[in-house]
Length: 356
Ligand code: MN
Image 1 (spheres, helix red, strand yellow):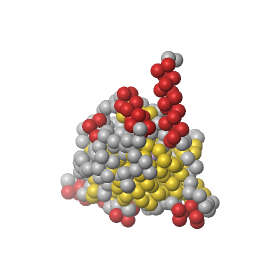
Image 2 (cartoon, rainbow, N blue to C red):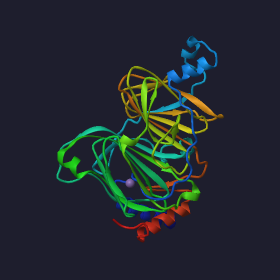
Image 3 (cartoon, rainbow, N blue to C red):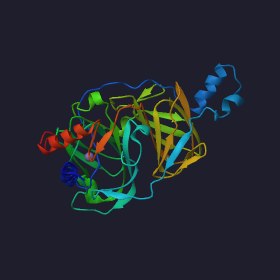
Image 4 (cartoon, rainbow, N blue to C red):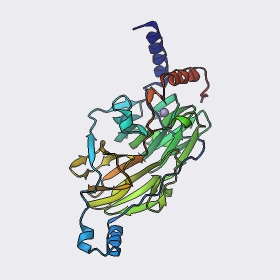
């Protein structure tokens, strides 16, 4: 190992030390709306039946599942270990650039699920202290408990159950992610998800942006036995409130009853479905809590996604257009080349990403 490598390792140790527990990210910021996702058709059973009738087909035929058309699951990820991120987030990492070929999940980079866990009341706030990010977005979904965020660009806020923070780190931010003061004092069950969304090369250094999205504003759509709550992108005629830089559709799905849920998403987009509670299946693949279904990708147009679940099963659906660009990830930075990573480390250490 040459001196150059040693120096890199030393720098890496410095950065990771500063980052605390390491490669986590989260939170949103302020920049500019770019591409809006395409409009996709979504069909609940009733809509499919209505369409079939219109086409002159019988109800029996309309009720038959189009199993041969449905998108298939290529693999199911079931992480066996949980680990702490800071002292506030006990997570299963479904994927990260260090565990999976980043091209297979692009434009997504990392997914952590902090499954429901009880925290006793505390005078101090648990979480992750000051650390940087550059080159991508961190998206935090609060399901139970509250997360507070504060960043060097002046962005910040607290999200509670059902809310989402969508932070574009872009050119660089320094931020902290902590349990809220109120939640820390009263304690309780905490559940959240953090997703990293990559930015295309032309937007790696875009202006940071923070979007605090309130769950009550998410459009709801009945999809067979389940209800979708749309965070980003389009589903049927509905559009989620999050602004994204590339075509992405994200929604929460909850089964109201035992049964089937069916919707359409672009076949050439990555499709990942995280099981949060209960159990859902697609074809022969089944996902329990903290399991991830990775779907096959390829082909033209929209493809049916058919899920079966029991009442109260909850899932997070992530669909996005692959970027098809090199991914070089290093701790809290995700760029296209090693040189850009070295620049990011230098810029952070010299204070160019700001301070809290
Ligand atoms: Mn972070």
